[in-house]
Amino acid sequence: MMRGITTPVLLLGVITIASMLGDIVNIVEDGLIPFSLFQITYLGAIGVFIMRWFAGGLGDFRKTGFELEYALFFGLIFLSLLWTPDAERGFMHALRVLVLSGILYLFVNWLRQPREAVWILGTLAVISVFLGALAIYSTINNPQAIIQDVLTDGTRNASRARIGQHDPNVFASMFFLPMAFTAAVVFSKVNLVLRGAGAVALVVMFVAVLVTFSRSSWVSAIAMLVVLALLYRQYRLFTGGIIAAILLIAAIPEFRFIFMNILNRFISLFTDGLDTSNTIRVMLADASVSMFFDSWLLGVGWRGFPDALLSYYNLQQTHGVFEPHNVTYLVYAELGLIGLLLFGFIVYKIAYIAWQNFRMADTVELKIVTSATGVTFLAYSIFYQFLGSGFLDNQLWITTGIILAMHIYLRMPERTANRHGAPG
Image (cartoon, rainbow, N blue to C red; front, side):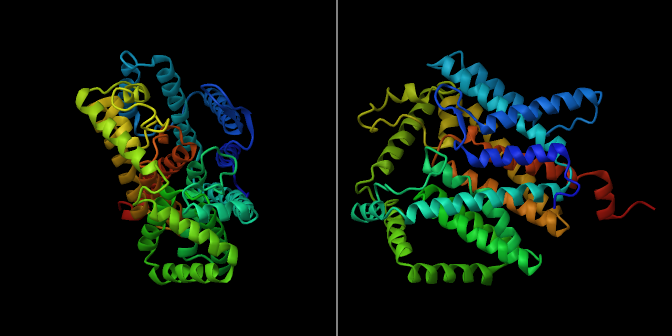
């Protein structure tokens, strides 16, 4: 599988793995800019990219196709620092997002073949299975926490898995891409051994997502897998997986306790109970609407949401929560109508490209890569309607980078000629 893998692609694989490892290897934890293994590998790759680019005479540089949209969006972000309540914090956050967006150029310039994408995603899946197994093991071997969760109707979630992350929601979302890849392998027409290995890996990662007790990740992952099953028309296989999961829960006592916690956690989506997160989310959403109507054109400024929130609710009412829990209302509250239109167009364009990739895919490898990345982007689009930190999600940027790289590959003149027939 390593045959023909170039050094740049190896670097992309290292970056992707480092992103999956999260804060397990953390160099600097505190401060405005955390420094982890991902930052080291990413900055190192940028250095290699620049040196190779100059050594090659600055030629053969691929663009993402989003230069105008990103210039307008980032231009608005930096302009809004003129009126944001905390300009320093806003500038550092905007700078981090801008630097992170450079990962798109690494992928569109270095990722040239579908087999390279398969290698990266396959390696990511292997690492993810180990992390998922560790999360499951740590949950099952913590019976006191499981009992506490049952007694509190699943609202305190003392046993929530979060290996290498502070937030179990973020940890759960990191499995979206490898889960989508292994599910696509299971649904596709590859040999039985690969499909079997993919099925085992998928089950491990899906259970790992469950034991994070992240409701937003559950909704996103289920939607992702359902859409993937529809794309491949694998209704019977998908139904069989559900039946197998039910039998597994019935057979293993520890899983029955965990399932009770999951069920209680899901029910809490529709009730207040001991879990105040639903009420807080409503308050934050209400405040964001008020911010929009008070500053509807350009918003309150980048990263101005926490300070502006105090004009509508105090921290006692929100139980100390002041960060937005939805990327959409973060954008329209902080950047106004103009920011919302720009952001919406960018998301739509990426989603459209992902869909076109799947439609143009004409090999098993391409189908797997394009379907996996497309539904992963869908999952993140859903997930970040419950969380507001999407702009700094490494895995989301990596997913987008693969989508754009495959789109460039699929639209190469020689491929277009082969599909439609060379002119005679």
